[in-house]
Structures are given as structure tokens and as C-alpha cells.
Length: 81
Image 1 (cartoon, rainbow, N blue to C red):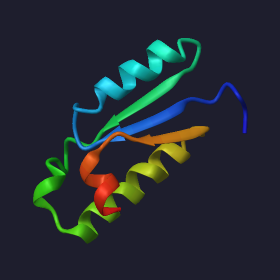
Image 2 (image 1 turned 90 degrees about the vertical axis):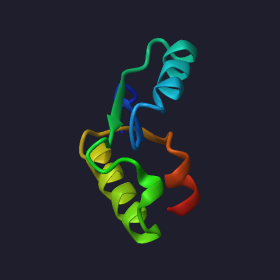
Image 3 (image 1 turned 45 degrees about the vertical axis):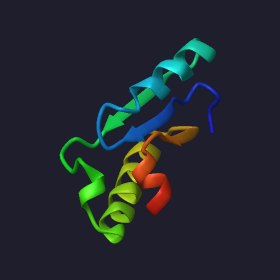
Image 4 (image 1 turned 180 degrees about the vertical axis):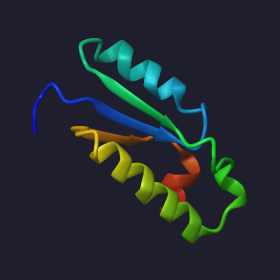
């Protein structure tokens, strides 16, 4: 893992941009990737299994981009997956 790799952040939409902003404020020298899964939003209307599947897909997407850490900025995903 390269220390210059980005930090990945995902949410079902744009609500997690406040988390992205906080990370950029506290860690201004870090690169970030923000994934807004607006195609499947809102997650609150989905089954638990669908939310788990979306969360895995989002995590894999960010891992494929060599993220050194992944932040789940989605409350629905953190409570279901």
C-alpha cells in the first residue's frame, strides 16, 4: 500500500459530502475519491440484502482504485451492512 494512495468515501448520494469536506479540512494533503451511488439511492427504501450488495460493490470499486482506507459515509449502509 502506497501512502500516496487516496482515501475512498462512499454514500448513497451527496449527503456524505460533509464527511468528505471534513476529511479534506483535517487532512489537506490527502487525495480522496468520493463515490455517490445515486443510481441506487435512496438506500432506505431497499432491502437489507440490497444494501449489503451495494456496499460491497462500492467497496470493491474503491479498492480497485487502490484506496488506502474506505470511509462509509452512509448511515443506512453502516446500520445494515
